[in-house]
Image (cartoon, rainbow, N blue to C red; front, side):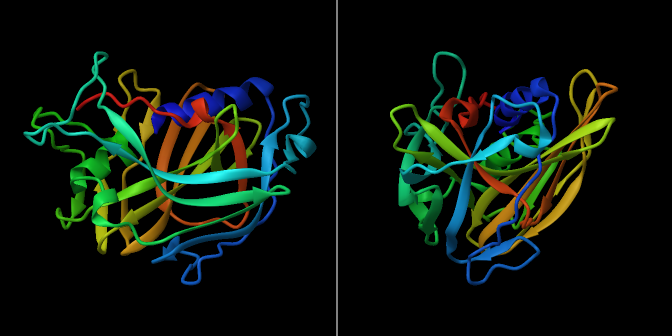
Amino acid sequence: MKNVNKKFWSLFLSMLILIGIAACDPDSEDADESGYLGNFLIIESQQVWSPNYETGKLSNICKIFNDDRDVEVCVLMPQYDDNGENIIDARGNNVIIKEVIDSGSIKNGILNFEVNELGDNFLLKTGEDLLFYVFREWWVDDNKDGKAETISISPEAARGNIITILTDSASPEGLIKEGFSGSKTSLCAEYIYFVYVDRNCTITAEQGQDAIGYTTFNGFNINLRKGWNAICKKETYRTTGYANISIEIKYPDDFRWILLPAPSITTSITSP
């Protein structure tokens, strides 16, 4: 997920502007303000926006999207060999394929889709895989044994996955729910990840830093409930060159669905 945020952040940082966000409410019947969205993920009658590359003004950084698209709701599934080991490509990356689990639409710029509970065949193989693919920045395997010492999930048997939302456009596109804010000394980008888990669980991570000490990954302790949860990843970039990345469970009512070129949300995950 790290590559996703840096690519999109660079686009907006180069424009030197902040984004203003319009409100939209969670639609899942069991949704609550804590970020729990229920057993069924329901996104209904929500406006889609697209970046406005022709402006430098806060007031119109995004423009309303009015076109139609068919939508695919997907999970990304790592591939394993007969011994249960990750299949690695020639570049040293885990081989991952896209599995379409549901569909939806954008009609006149309005997004609708629903996702049921995820079956066993759409869950990542282990809780450790969930930590690796969703919380990659915090995942450090000092012992080189395929398990992280810096982040954990309890119970260890918990499994889950995260969805990716793509369109049928001739030029592939993806949807991300996000928000921006800032001040004279910092800019903040926040992204919502829709994560399903097959049981109640707790994820705990230690505070860490990147190799050069400029980015701090804040420690966290989050409780996920069986079903769909909204995980908000917040990246704060300061004019000093330092940055912070944090995680919490929440579903803000002031984020927009932004339609982006699919390469901006496609990740390449290095093998652990």
